[in-house]
Amino acid sequence: MRIAILTISDLGAAGQRADTSGDAILAWAGARGYEVAVRSVVPDQPDRIAGKLARWADSGEVDVILTTGGTGLTDRDVTPEATRAVLERAAPGIAEALRASAAPGFPRAWLSRGIAGTRGRTLIVNLPGSTGGVHDGLKVLEGFLDHAVELVSGERVTH
Image (cartoon, rainbow, N blue to C red; front, side, top):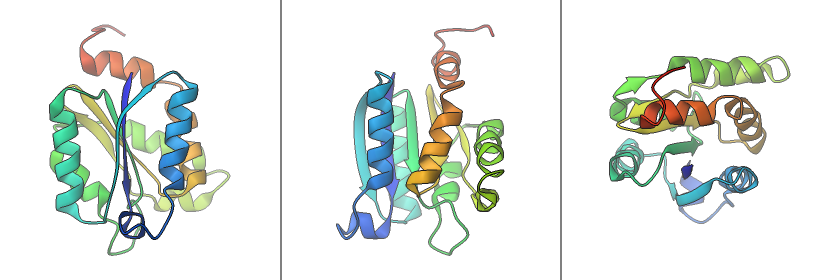
């Protein structure tokens, strides 16, 4: 599986904060034998986020794009809106599963506005910006990511 990692962070894009949540996704992907095909950090700007998501999904070079950051309630948290602008089909159950799994131990998980869906043959999933939120989300994705990618890619057409 070919993974893209997009970190959304004003401070990270300015080189003022380490990309620890992106690093967590990178380590997780490596442990599972996935190839990280591309990785980038962009500021909390909808056009920059949407542009990167669309280019990566349309390139055919990645199966999954995992974003981290920009899913909260502040004015600068625009990742869900930027993602929605490029999605062709929503997959709301994925985002619901991420929140529902984390919420019993971390009730503020319900404040995450992350979404998920597909563009072409690429699955896009918004994860929170915190390392803990990323770890929680990746644990959930482990249960179905391989199967979801098989379905999206057309590799498997039955359940």
